[in-house]
Image (cartoon, rainbow over all chains, first blue to last red; front, side, top):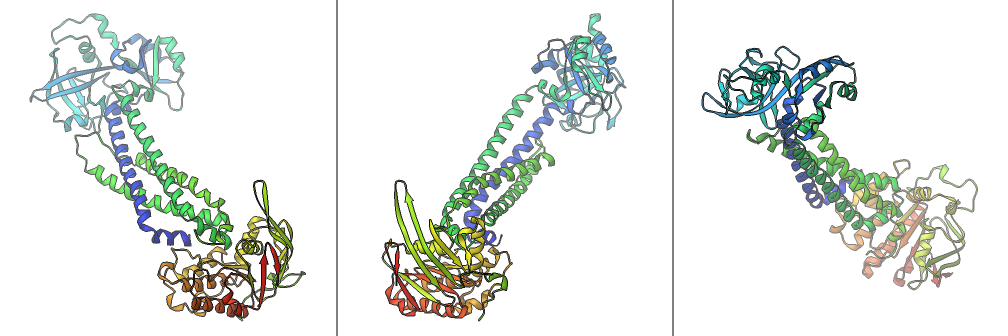
Length: 375
Length: 236
């Protein structure tokens, strides 16, 4: 490492230039990672926070819009309850509505119809728990949007009035819309399109969107067996994220950009060390003639690359985190330590691979080239 | 005498100390045609002896250095240094032998641009991993008259100064054999004499076997013996 450190110092302007590129890529990585986590939270945090193992939708429902299309019957819920490995199964209703509060604030809500007191009922950080027929418990993010506990919201067109009786501690959103939990019976009336004074067809009061299933601790669910018994199409909780509006399109776009950034970073570092190694070819031949071993020179080269990568990624991540925390509330952005650390580790490891591909050329340098004139 | 050689570096039984090249033939091939770069060459150099190899370009002088310095294995013949047969070694142990027992002085110094004069010498200690007694770098720099420029980098030094540091670097590991490749190629007449007389002085002082390849006939007065190379054959 004797030579590596001295070369870094001597050729610092070149190394800083290359390190600057890696640092900028690291900044971009951090921002993209934050945006990606933010969008995922905005899209499916409502689902993520449900203590659910799997959702069973109506038979043959296409996954990409399952939450808006699927209809199941309470009898199917009963069948699921009796399946081996199932701890609990409950009907779950989902409906996106436009509402307006009594303080004239328009707000969209993703209604989650659940039985009060069941395992699906949300924990409440402020106000009362779910129970009253017209009482809703809203996501903490709805409070950020201006809704308050005690407000009354009116569902557009249907005219049903719902009172905000409580709020959760953290963000529950679905398809970028704030979640509002409400009693299943109220959800069933709304889902049937029935206003406060309308008659509801009796079947509507036995319907739900899906069966929410929770497995016993440590048990694996046999989804196929449950499906054939109950006549449903079930997916795990994680798979159900794909049924959230826009989720797949958003995450795949961002992943693609991130994959490209990793590749660009590896190529930039690889290209730099290729040129650097070729430039030092005569020097390396002299070192080989002096008896420097191949492992010594390879170690020295890789150490040099590692120092540059660690320093530049470190600076880039620090700047990225700084910029990220300055981003205001309007944008879905959330920096999560595991995602940021994974991105930094990948940047360093892939950069090192790129450098290694260039540095192995050192092994091929012929010490004979040290004799004769310098070219 | 500042050379530090431990008993294990000495041959147990061998042909004697210094460099012994006998019956060495080296053919260089490029495709269909092969050129005989060295043709049945014999040369032995005693410790403390300064031998100059002169001859026109393409006569095989560089090939002789390559063979003596364990950079190339000849097709025929043997090369021994202090009784150690170079051909019997693997490529990695030849590299190890080079860093411990052979010093190279290259054309125009061939110093590493990133290192100060003192670090050029300290690098040798790092290459050998400290398993050997080395000369004191600062003291060695004083000895070649460069003690006052220990912190200069190659681009801040003249050609003659670079060559002095090159010589000091080659002597750091207290080698048995010193191989010198055209040391005066880039120097004026006065500097050439200074550099070659320094080589002669160090050869005696360090009791090292020195082979210098040159086409500069002006500096031969400093050498103990002169051999001439023509078309891969030695005559002297």
